[in-house]
Length: 397
Image (cartoon, rainbow, N blue to C red):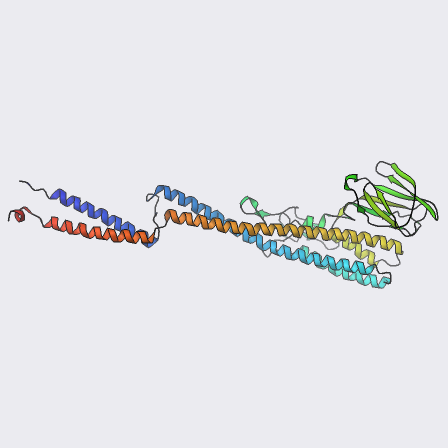
């Protein structure tokens, strides 16, 4: 009888080699912490893990953009708050200037204070972002966005710079909207006395009582009659149409024209006229210049001074509204940044866990497999040793 041991020995040796390879693989996984060390280990898991890695890279880049935007917006909020405080200080000075007991020298001193506040506001408008740019730099500027001091011009393109995925994050604020393109008067129309008026009447900035009647036309209120029996007429100067005439005039009584209400105070004279015109736009710096010039002009008739002061105050209120609105918009952007940061953190955690599940080794499971494999290895070696000792002479002997 023939006893073949070679095939048995080769099978046992192959089994030992396979176990050794398994043990080496487990030891490599445990030392690296990775279950998938090459695409060949698990092609599907490797592909999915690479997608997770790419997603983590995008999330990390987006987080950096988020942090940059948050830093700039926080600085912008602080600058806008400072700007609001400066304009409120200007308004307090203008209210004080309306005191009838103030002499020209007192108003000129207030004008000098306004000059200082204006310089401080210009410095706020040119606040840097700490990285070579400017907070109010619109779509980007490497030089101060508000150039010049007497009549600053806004040099960058209006708008915002935005970064991050889908341009989610603002890194500048539109300085043109915040400081330059601001409505005059009450925001809808402006009022003025005609240059040739002879009476002491003056017109208030007015307000809107019915927005649906606003036409965007210019109007003139003309005074006629005799002292004690004055009347007024209203003319649409855009269409050259008389809307009303011969209406009895009473000082300080509201006059409504196409949804716009004004009051003429003081003592106008026959032949005087007062105009209403659609509100134009100008910079807050021009409004402050108008206020400073008004306070520094001596010997101005009281009615003229009062009318111009009220007009400047109304325009200043619109500038305050503009800065406050811009600050609200910055606040909304900051909330967006905070919410996006939270979402980014959650997505990063999810992608990290997904990648870990796909490629990282389960240490506890790997130790168990290693120990089990070692036990099998020991058994295989003992089995091979017993086969190696077997020979025909031993069997016959």
